[in-house]
Picture 1: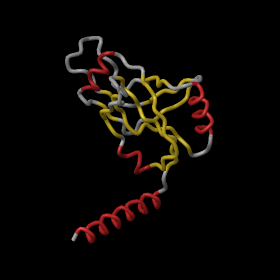
Picture 2 (picture 1 turned 120 degrees about the vertical axis):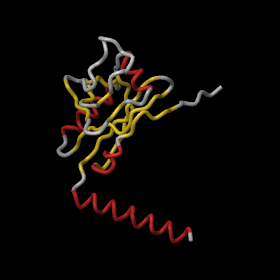
Picture 3 (picture 1 turned 45 degrees about the horizontal axis):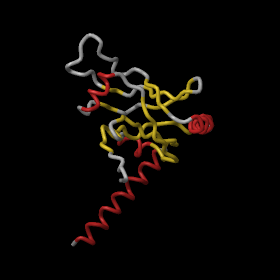
Picture 4 (picture 1 turned 45 degrees about the vertical axis):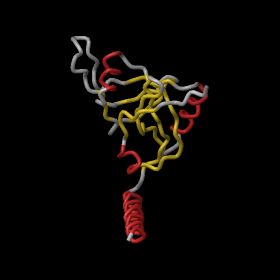
Length: 152
């Protein structure tokens, strides 16, 4: 019996695809405490303005906001703490090499549950210039207009 990987999105960083050219993506596990997982099950997360960085051979997710769990007690988590990401050593080496290149950064695209575990989709990305953003918007509007003409 082939077991399908069941995925359920928690949050998506919509701003990322608008502000960056996505070059390559990775799937990473994340180290969480119990109240964070419960808050994520309620969908209380925000990846806007968050990024990943490599420190001492480990990858960390910085400034990702996971709201406090409502039923949590005094031991509730800090909403914006740095969280360790779990990747293979070869993937970490690849990320270290890529992030040393000028203009490349690590950004989280989405956070989701996969077989009961929380995963983060990381991307190696290059920032878009303002004219690139305008060009993307113009292409999207043109595409939308073409679809309308075909529809009628």
